[in-house]
Image (cartoon, rainbow, N blue to C red; front, side, top):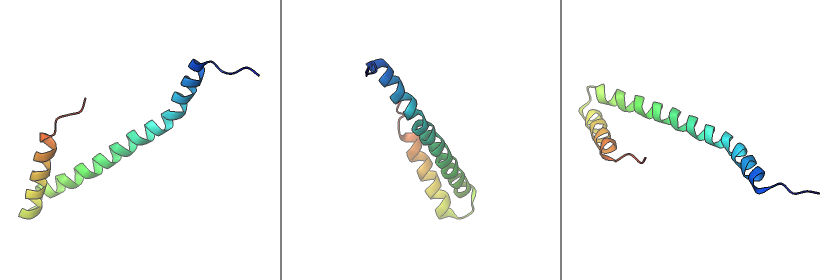
Length: 68
């Protein structure tokens, strides 16, 4: 029985991992959208405590440098 070359094995591993990659991306997008919507609602509400918490959270997130 012949064994697969290393390149073929690596390609198969990459193809198997694409499902996890797409799942993580979609999960992060959904979580970010929900969290962003909730922060937006808190930012426009008339309750001062919620508004200041949202302003503080936005300032904190904007102060973190992007990891690129």
